Image (cartoon, rainbow, N blue to C red):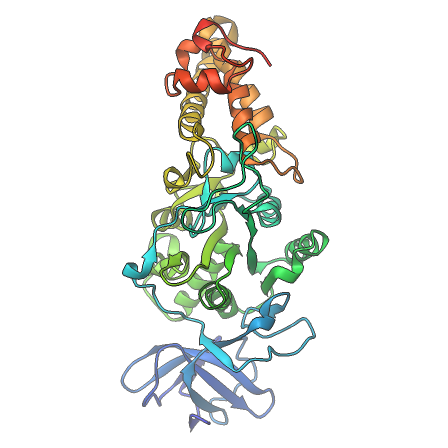
Length: 488
């Protein structure tokens, strides 16, 4: 069914065209613009008033004639065709297949703008996700249904870390009352009740080599058949970058809430998305806010992040790992700053650790998982997890203070206890944080390495762990650190 069609444009301003006809037109409605040379171009309504509408073209407006062009309002929002054939497919930022296998064989289409989840329909995220990365599992635990972004910087290995998480992530506590498989030592195994994720990967404004890295990694690790890819590369139009994550999240909602799958959504790079939003806002003549970004940047980001979670009546879930590169490593920049208000924590990559050869270079103190407390402990990970992670945070914070003091007065002037903290910091970074890209540690191994690092500290400094756990998990068995530090 064809929509309303008008001839002629009022004016053309870059990729935005203005038409004087806007009767029965809706915001975000899809528009077809026809001209004699290029034929049909799609766009969407980005602004309107009583007697005019602004349409942004998916592409550029080169060759358009204000007099000869025709505008057809299609009477519907942008939609994505979804179906069981989604898995293993590659789409562009507009949801069009680009892998050569044709369209999805399905009559089901969904509005890419989505609908807000009724807060009453949400269920609280509690299930532990084992990523196999100690810095995350041990101290910044990821929970099913959580949105946990990676704050990175130019040149840092955020893509390698995201690919590793995609390969290794498993849910170990699935369903109400379920328990993960455990070894004789109480550690949680990645086998038994573990379930893998279906992955939605969305690239916005990235270079081709970055997209190729992820595709090659998915293929070599054998997970490509369980991945849906949306690619909007650096040479794609700005508006396509704004549509791509919405297409990806629409596919995720279909798989999670209609097909009851566990979906992991990886979006890179949110900074490119925000730059495109700023560009579009500037073209529309809107009043800029902080650093030129539009005043609605917070609500726009929330419209993406808040599409993660679990809802009643569906066993599926959407877990988000957005990646954003902080300009000049500035965590107070508007993009990471506003993202931190919306998401349930963040994984921050540290340039100093990276330069010292530590991978993954996850910063110990700025990183945070606000839902961690509800997804760890007996029946989910291990009984000592909460106390151990608290002790590691506190001790590593002390390491930072001692290192600053050492840079002023010299290491030889430090007290014996402070020197022990320096040894702990080095041991913590080398055996707990550092691990190989293909090293998949279960949670039991991660927690054991945490205790191993704490062995460098005198017993009187371990005030956040109980003597019961010290006696149970410190080696040799039964040794209390208050009687002297153990050695491994």
